[in-house]
Every structure is written in C-alpha cells, then in structure tokens.
Length: 105
Picture (spheres, helix red, strand yellow):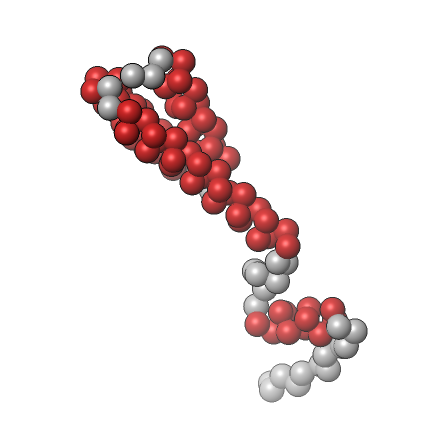
C-alpha cells in the first residue's frame, strides 16, 4: 500500500488538472473532485494498488488532453474557422487573394 504522501500528491495533481482543464471553473470541478476523493478513500480502505494506478492514469490522460489541445491550437490556427475563412486564409498563405464574392440581396 502506498504512503499517505503518495495519495495526497495524487489527489493534489488531480485537483490541479481539473482546475486547468475545466471550461467553467465552478460547475465541473466540485462533482469531479468529490468523485475522485471518493475513489481515493476507497483506495485507503481497500489498499488495492490498481485503484491508485487508475487514478494516476486519469491524471496523465487529463494532462495529455490539455497539452494536445494547446498544441493543436498553436500549430493549426485554422481549426476554429468557418469554411470560407479557412479558404481565404489558405489562399493568403500561398500569396493569392480571394476575389470578393457577390452576395444576393
């Protein structure tokens, strides 16, 4: 069974990742943190190392997902544009300028 220090460190890392990755801070963090707290309390009672490893894997997944989103936004700036904006940005990138499209009134 892991020491109390390892359990506390794991729980703090969960809270840290939940704060960093939650889109709306207050609505999501409380239920998730209480769920993880319940899981870790179950680990303290049972002593099953598999539970602690699963929680550590969940932390690693949250870190990797957050890092993936950050890198996707950084190196693929066209990801959140509409189709027309994406075509216009691609044309500018190769040195062309898109003609102004006529909009029917």
